[in-house]
Length: 531
Ligand code: GLC
Ligand code: CA
Image 1 (cartoon, rainbow, N blue to C red):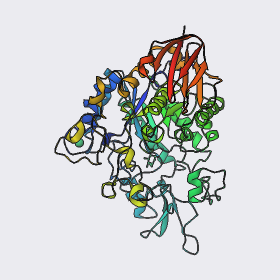
Image 2 (cartoon, helix red, strand yellow):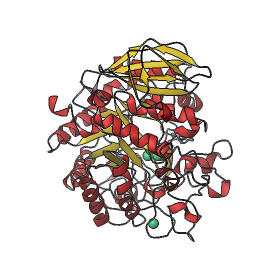
Image 3 (tube, helix red, strand yellow):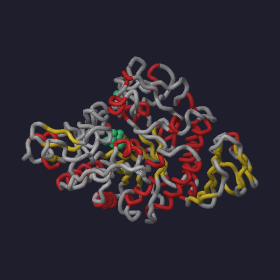
Image 4 (cartoon, rainbow, N blue to C red):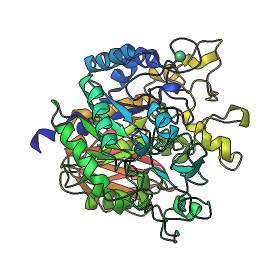
């Protein structure tokens, strides 16, 4: 796979945009494509090479875009198809590629396919979804629970059958055993690839095929993931079926037939590290990149993080490329979850993400150390928060708008508009407040991205584990860079090969000569270039 060695998605950084909260160009309080276009200069300046754009297709928003009503169009909240074309062209001019979010597991219940499917047992789209008879006592076809809680089945009185929904009842699951569903998605995929989209982030790609006999899930055991223990069952038959690999292989063949090849970045919604490698196939015939939830949900301590990275490195097939992310639209932001507002922890987290072997995927706001927003019951929008508040706040805290500047609207929306989610970010914690400051988190992130882009060992060199004292983690990239993180409350001295600090979480150390040992303060890190 020599031609892939320098592929942009391996050497570059990907940046997730949650468009509803990125930037609002028309003052309705909702981020939109015009807002993304207006901030392409920021992304070019930051140095990212790709954008994963969360869904922009027409949606009734039962799950904020992840309930798609038309796969080949743009929701009026976000703009038009022409605006998306403009975004694709404008980002390409800046050396940035666009990945759209493909949602193949389910549609909206307002999608014409489902409207037809539910109309009668004989309608032409009936078999496009998963319908099943009640059991003889009228109860649900099996014990499957939805990911957001409750049963995964809803009885449709029109035809007296249950339909399956692994998420909300407004998101009926498609039946991927049906060949016409597969054909329809081939057309959707090609529609976007022909428009110049560089690939897809594929929503819950491990889930799309269901057990063809609809067998009951077994009870969860202590060894199962927390979410499985909470819902009391292992997701064995409603997800994670082996037949999904046939579909991923088919998409990869299609992706490879394009010039340049298109990229598949899968949301592999699995909670055991050992379940991830199979999604890479033989290393070059399924996903290019598979997100790691075990990594995302790791505690921020040296031993845990090191062991996840090293198990990942050991477990991937040859040629496979890891992906590292610390925040996304579904997970508390890294500045809150990993760093808890601590500046040293935050910078260690960014240094780690940007100097490991694998593609870093930053979430909008990571570059300024944006923390989760504060939520009130009245402001909630996410179906999870709406259902479980106050026990769980749902995903709104990590979806609050990006603060670009001080003042009303924070540069996200116009001064008199009401943003769709509240902005609680403290003053000056925004792009304008950090951009000219050589010691800001934003400058640190940008410098790290630039460093990574400039040195082949930093983006492509092998990961080599180095021994280091408890509470610390050290690794080499190729022959020339060593990253050392002190994730502890005490100072440490580490022996390393002589060199120069290329970048430190305390910037005053940049350029410092290291002869044999480096002393790091608590929660300090550095990347040292061997000389
Ligand atoms: C993915 C998305 C999440 C969505 C779910 C259902 O996990 O990231 O936001 O709710 O799939 O589509
Ligand atoms: Ca808008």
